[in-house]
Amino acid sequence: METTENYILSPIILLSPIIISNSESIHTMKHNPDSLEERFRTKGFQEGGVLMFTPAVTLEFIAAAEKEGFNILGIDGFLRTDEWIQPNSEHSIDFTSKTEGGFNVTQRALKFVKDREQLGLHFEVVIGRS
Image (cartoon, rainbow, N blue to C red; front, side):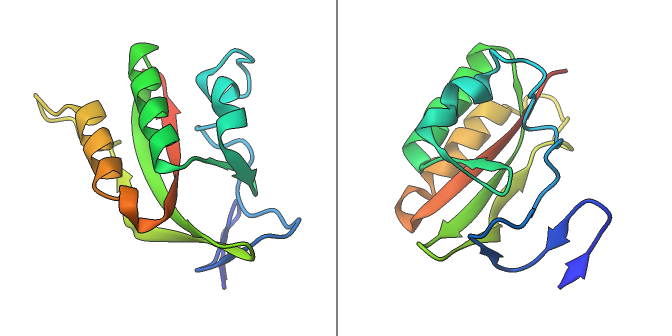
């Protein structure tokens, strides 16, 4: 297991009370009680500070984020069983470096999730404001 100052990096995240991510990461936006994430919290589940959704709710979240002016910064896919959650970098995408003209992040994000709907994944959507 490799560690850094803010994270414990592991191929498998056990469902236990250990801290597995930085609770002040940019996706939480806890300073805004009316934030998009707060409104969607009951539609997903939270494990280790990470709010995850089914593919259907992820698509709804992405559409709502665009409507409310949030930027989609990335999407992380997770495999989940009753005993563990495993992040899957093959099913994750980072939009923070996508700055070329004409690049529609929302459409790419929606396609990314739709292409993975049948894989049994859950998703975390990282959002921010410009």
